[in-house]
Each structure stands twice: as C-alpha cells, then as structure tokens.
Image (cartoon, rainbow, N blue to C red; front, side, top):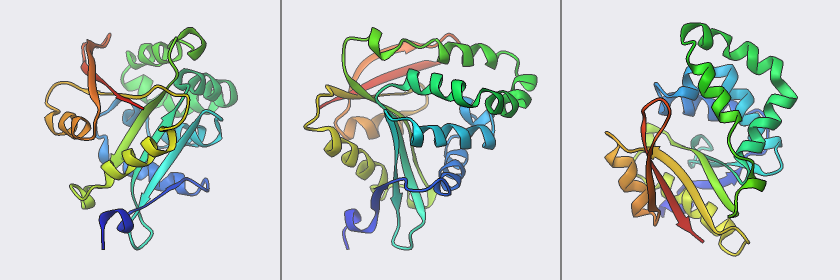
Length: 205
C-alpha cells in the first residue's frame, strides 16, 4: 500500500477534532511560544482557524483513523489574530494569564503578533503556513510531505502567488532540509525582536 493511500488527508470537520490537533501540537512543539501559552489557549486558537473564512486546517489520518499530522494555514493571518481577539478576548486573556505571570515578557510578543501588517497593506497574495506537525510515531513516513502536496494542489491554479512559512535557522537542519526537499526556496533570513534567528521559505505556485 502506498503512503499516499495510507495517510488520508482531509479538512477538519468537527470541533471535537481540535483536541487531537492540540495534543499533537503539544507533543511536537515543546518549548515553543504558543505551547507555553497552554492547552486551552491552543484549543481556542485552532478553533479560530476553522471559523475564520480565510483560514483552515488539514488533517492526516492513518489507516485506523487516528490523527497523525496537521497543517494550519491562512491567507490573512493577521486578520485571524484580530478576529480571535475581537470574538474571544476574555477567553484568551484568561487562558494566557498564567503564562504571562510566569514570563511577563511574552505579553510584548502577543502585542507584536496583533500588530502584524494587514493583508490589505501587503502587495502579494499568498498562503501562510502557520503550523505543520507530524506525530513522532510516523516520522520519516511522508506525512509532512503529503500535507504540503495537498495544500500545493489546492492552490496551484488559484490567484495566490506562493506559500510562505518560517522556521528556526539554528539547530534545525532536519526541518530546513525537509522544506527544501519539498520545493520551498529560502527567501530571507531574519532575527526576531527576541533574538531568534529564522528562515523564511516560499513555494511559488
């Protein structure tokens, strides 16, 4: 049986599937900013990807129907953040309170995210891949590549110019190689306000 048949790729259909996405996020992105904000915060965030009209989540399932990968994306990520704050500001404030108390400086990062440029201020139309996670149990079995192939196919004949994503530049060779292997080109290197060195990749449609 081929890998493509073994891993079924589909859009998230129900809110209940969000719990599987959150669990996979926590297992995959240990120590990351969003992970530090907590499980409840992540649940509301990924719910937002479902209800926001310019965003979505793709799932990868194994032959038993278990979620083994996901890809969250948006054609207007800054608008998604504003939508979430507008609709659920009290929940996000409550869920992030513990993290802010433990690390007060993260509130600055939250404000910077909300201050990201609106899509109307940008020239190009593109899809931003926000999160791509694969279960450790199926590592190196092509799940991530299959998720990327699906989103490429969905937008290949659209009016979007490219897919874009960011990943760590340091101590992250395996992930950088993975994106390059899947046709993404390194567009630029930059350093965040927190001093984190990042690579920005593009896949031209």
